[in-house]
Amino acid sequence: MNLSVTVLEISGILDGIRGNELRREVNEVLAKGADILLLDLKEVKFIDSSGLGALVSAMQMMRNANRKLFVCSISDQVKMLFELTKMDRIFQTFADQDEFNRQVLAMQT
Image (cartoon, rainbow, N blue to C red; front, side):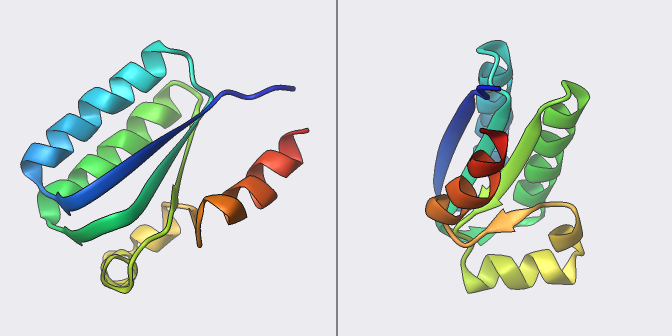
């Protein structure tokens, strides 16, 4: 089974404005038929409540389409936010894209 994977690399501050952009990007990913979306947050320095809402919205959009969303390369600040808000139970995270490739894509072949 050959799954289509799209990687979105997000940078800067994930706030309401960037969150709206993320939602549009997820719609485009879905329209192109990707099976898996990997959000690489390596360059994200801060996420506010609107940004967190956008991540949850992105997850719901992917799930509603029977697709999968994963997150990788989160900073210590983002990791702490995920733990405080229990988002670490919702999002499956990976250390980096290499770990994602080893654990998720290797299982698909």
